Length: 206
Image (cartoon, rainbow, N blue to C red):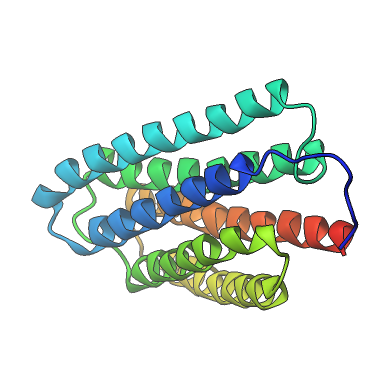
């Protein structure tokens, strides 16, 4: 770890941890949305939108502090990229939840439920990792696990695509479900991007 002779604003660690905790809440709601009866989904989607709104506020606070703080805990551009990628995770999950309700999907494929479960694991793993930015210790296990989960999400996604495009499938239903699972796949990719930014920071600070 490099020695610094200037004070650092450690509030960023708390803000990033808070932003990651919102992802856990959002992922939990998403898991419920893909599992419950359609009649129960609108209320859960409303809660998801509230979480997304609060998460946006957390991102804006990080950006505001970046613009008003002279000395940051690590590279300013890396903090910006990390905060933006955390925001991408919740945006994709919120969009997926919204489409499940808007498209009035009667049921969700088993693969979509598996995708949501993987996102929940990624969210919890990310939330556990953010406080470790203070010391940069134990983070290698985090990005390795996120990468493993993203690979698992890729396999589930490819399997679902093959099943969706099976002969005789209704084109409209295929289109609706594919939009949802594309967003779930995008969310898994966004979590991996978060891990890449964390790895970049850890390497620079080592």
